[in-house]
View 1 (cartoon, rainbow, N blue to C red):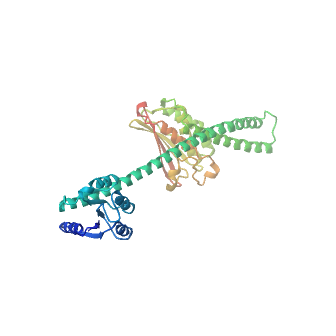
View 2: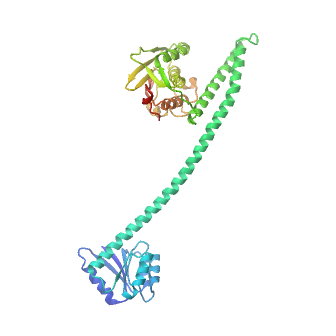
View 3: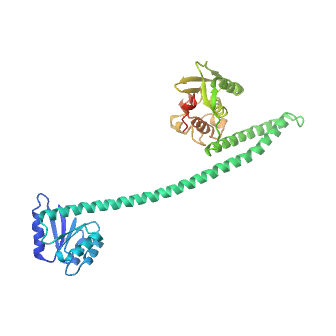
Length: 393
C-alpha cells in the first residue's frame, strides 16, 4: 500500500489522478486529498502515514516556489512530485533544483508515466536519505578518527615522556645505590676494621635490600630502553651449548642453596642461533633463574635444546609451583606478578618476563609456556638459526 497525499484544488484533475492510480494492478494506493497548502501541512503534521506527495504548484493559498518551500519544512521524509500546467513548468523545474523529486505536466502524461514517477520518486528519496545518513556517518567517523589520532599522538608523547622519565630516574637511583652496595660490601669484608656479629647481620640485611633495589632499577632501565626502541641489537651466529653451560655454571650456587638439581640434556646436532649474544643470554638467564626461584627445595630443573626447521628451541622445564590456567595470559604482561606460595619470598618487579618476550620478539623468535599448578612449568624459546629466518615482530 502506497499512501499518497494529493494536493489539488481542481476536482476534475484530482479525480483523473485517482482513476489513473486505480488502474495500477496489483499495487494499491490510499489517496488523501487536500485543496490548500494549509490543509496539506495539517495532514503532514498529524500521525497519518504519507509515502509521497503529489501537488499542484499553484494553489489558492500558495503560488510558485513558495509551495515547495512550505512543503519541505514539514515533508522531511516524503518525496514531492509536482503536477502542473505547462505555463508553470519553469516553476516546477525550479522546485526540482530545490529538492523536489519530479514533475509532470497536466495533459501530457498517462497512467504509466504517473506510476513510474511515483515509484521512481519514492526510491530516489530513499537513496538520497541513505546517502545523507552515509555522509553523516562518514563525517562522524572522520571526526572520531581525528580525535583518536589526537589521543594517540598525546598517548605516544606521554609514553615517550614516561620512558625518558623512567630512564632518567633509574640512572639517578642506580648511581647512589651502587655506591651504597660498594661501601657496605667493603665494611662487611673488614676494610674498616672488625665488625661485631650483630652489626654484621644488620649490614647484611641492608646489603641484600639494596641489591634487590638495584635489581628493580636495572629492570626498569632495561624495559624503558626496549620500549623506547633504543635497544641496539648486534646479532651474529651464536653457539647455544657453551652459552647454556656457562649460564648453568654461574647459577649453580643458587640452585645448590635450595638443593635443586639442574641438568643440560646432551644436544644432538647443530645448536646455533642468529642473535645478539648478550641480550639473548640475559633472557635465558632470566628464565633459568625463575625456574630456581619458583621451585620448592629438592626438585629438579632440566634444560634441553631441540632442532626445528629453521629454528632452535631452548626448553627450561621445572618442577615448581606452576601457573593456574586463569593466570597464563598475565605471564608476559608488564608489572604483572602471579601470586603463589613462593612469590612473597622471591620478590621482583614483574618486568623480567615482559623484557624476555620483547627481546625474543626482536630476534624474530617466539616464547611459549606450558604449565600445571603445583606440578611445574616448561618455557620454550624458539630462535632463528639464520639471519634470513628472523622475522621481527
